Length: 179
Image (tube, rainbow, N blue to C red; front, side, top):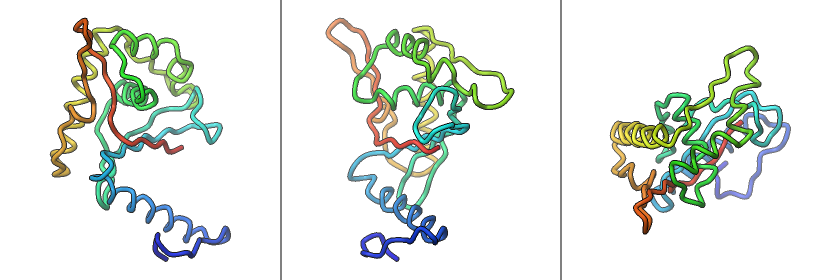
């Protein structure tokens, strides 16, 4: 079965569904140079099919060609990346990001469903966000170099100065979440 064929896997064929999903991921990855980087953020301890407070942000990947590359990030950086991806339509200042991480229920209750583990609340000061952005960009850059992908991490995790010298941050990538 090929992605372009009219055949669809049946509900009784788990293997066919897995193969179809894998083939779809590979199709998306092959189109990445045309449409930009594709990030996949993995949540665990989900109670519903939708993102909800209490889930843990487990890891982040980017897709390229026929491969997935895990981005080596700490929990704090995973939380920041998830936040930027959820709000990728609007560039935000470090202060706005800090306030969002401190007030949005998803981030306040991060990993609360994990069963006995300590809930990690990210540091949320404006200064900490600026430092985390630099470290996140550096980790992304190392991963892109290791995968031999000629993309500038500053073109993915962008910084834009405003008319008053404020800096706004945004992610320029396709993003999907797995639960």
